[in-house]
Length: 87
Image (cartoon, rainbow, N blue to C red; front, side):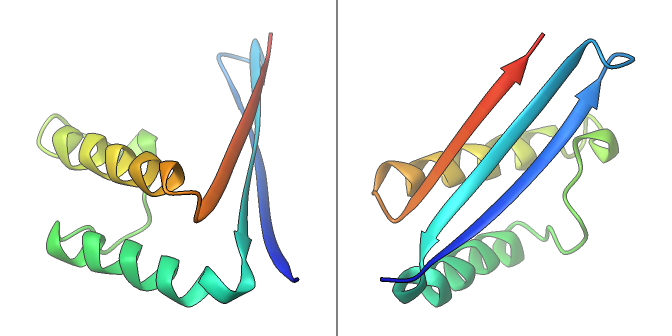
């Protein structure tokens, strides 16, 4: 079985917090996950890069719906998201 693993880190508030996160997707599910997320983004007209630093009051609900959608997908056991917050 082949898995695709995506990892990232970010630091906030002058390095007070560091977040490490990873996403694991089985290769056989990769196209379906990409199409599902792309379909959601196109329906919401979220065409650019998604960055919380770019969120305005006008787009906050779209970002919140995207996060809800992402975690609903995570709950189907198709993707596996994990994070660690270091203080």
